[in-house]
Length: 466
Ligand code: SAM
Ligand code: SF4
Image (cartoon, rainbow, N blue to C red; front, side, top):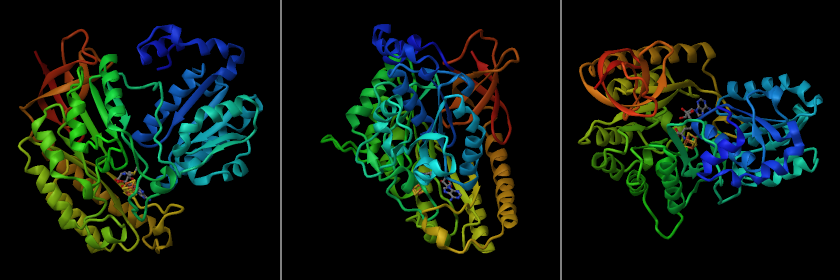
């Protein structure tokens, strides 16, 4: 993962090592010129970390694999549920002693934004606190740290800028993430994201497509467009490209063979997105469309801006496409006021939609959210019971949906090689994981046809069709 700096910069910029003079400027910093970056949370956090790493590499820092080897230790954090936030503080506790060794410790991301300067009180050994809406100021903040400033913060959320970097140090050699919209203007009553990531800001279509072209030139064949509500994209440039047009334009870029996108908000999910998938095979046949609950009453309390019936109309539109489109979702159980019959409605929605996969969570009260004021009266054991019932039901659905694919063949982008001889894995356009056998010597990064010979709830089993 951590390659020599010169090699990294050459690969990321497509230029020779002449592009790396700053590394020499910082040579005197020895261990202070090294960083360790650990990431918790969603794909957007993963991708933010790739950009943060790019900013540091461009300043002459070198990425290392352990906190022990680093002068700068950074945590990119998640606060979507309480457990995730607690994990961050316990990890920071473990690093208290590291500060005494002269290391600089920084907290980035959603916990940084949520807790702000209180982090310095709770963990005085932390020297940098920076939320994701302030990442564009990271170079200045790094300069302040290098100048010896003790506590440096970046906590503004009132920005209309997005975080774009000259260099992004991507972890995945096959699929490249690209944020096209940051923040969120929805106001789901349980969710901390509008607070931690700030208001919605879309990136200009020209800038997005320029990066897609660079990615194609660097050898990436799959791009994944990211946003908390990716389909609320509103091109701020005079071109005013619609989200569906952007998908089609990205698919036209030389070298690009797959375009994915996540996460879609049901209220902004329009017919032209389905038409883009229908008309362009490179736009992946998968939509992640979080529903959160099957009960209109609970959806209203969640401030989700659609009813069960309106959501089902979107599902019918997707299911009616000329090309089969996989649908996945997110569900929260045990939201304040969710009665047993509301929960039954979520179960019946599962029967009706028959999702290809889902992420399910127990409701977790979060700071700064409207639902914090609601009575969180459902006991933890009851939330766990509902979660288990939901997951059992979904397992049955996935088992039967995947079993129906036996005998079919799908194109798979090979991204994994097992230690076991001849065993490979990768994803279909519909984002199903396929584990398959092949006698080929090297397949990583290539697209192959796989015939499905078996299925489990979470993956397909198959063989390479030559
Ligand atoms: N923006 C996306 C959306 O609108 O669905 C995803 C937001 S969040 C990173 C991913 C999922 O976490 C949500 O879809 C929701 O199911 C879950 N989530 C968010 N806040 C939660 C909370 N307070 N308790 C439990 N689950 C939560
Ligand atoms: Fe959170 Fe709702 Fe925005 Fe998704 S749409 S990030 S759940 S507020």
